[in-house]
Length: 200
Image 1: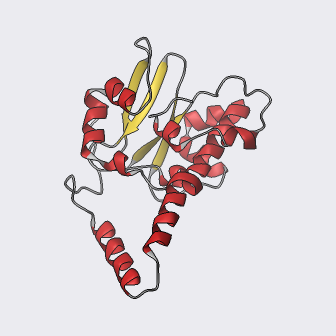
Image 2: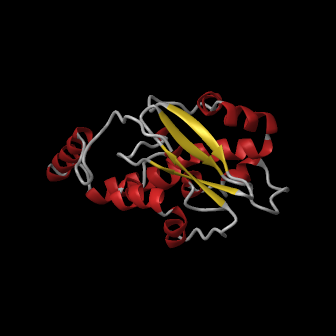
């Protein structure tokens, strides 16, 4: 991992200006009776777990079925992802591939840089200080606590995202999926597998 300068610094536990403005707007809409807080929660949950990560799942599924696309994705993630229509101002995206011997996991040690175009909203735990610090110090133990048990021979590589470069994990294609088409394969891909805290 290398040190880098993040463009959106704030101290752990402190909200950014954008987060503070969004929260104030949400409170105003709720107080005026314009929006039900449960509706907001449902929309955020849908975007965090379904709508956003579906983009990344399509990228992964395409890489599983198209070897030429996979090579382009690993060589220039930003360009290959844009081929499928997913792009944004969040900086470049590099794609790192899981293998039988290597497991990749993504963290942002200084704040919460995240590949929004392919993963949607970052989970709360991704932004937490314990995740950001422990994933660097003791990745195998933290992954195990999160339900991702990795045998000792597997090398764990931790990638530190920044405002200039964000990472997406290309999970290994699950076994016994040769009969599945691209759309069916995309349904197997989870947000957490593309962060690297889950192994398919």
